[in-house]
Length: 68
Image 1 (cartoon, rainbow, N blue to C red):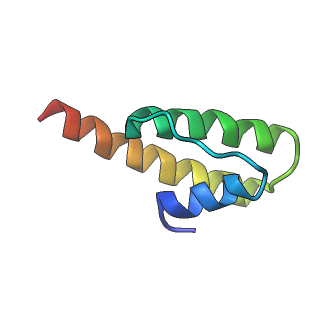
Image 2 (tube, one colour):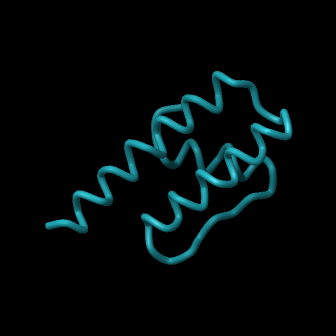
């Protein structure tokens, strides 16, 4: 798992499709959904942490784009 697309595919396996319309909001909602499936023990900790790191990185990138 290396990209935001990979995180989207992970969520899709659980029937979770996220599209709010603004990329930064999509990332924030994906983070919430990811936490829920981890707390439900549907994914392991390693997968959760990898996905969480990707979402954090992408969120920072989007924040820097908005600041410009």
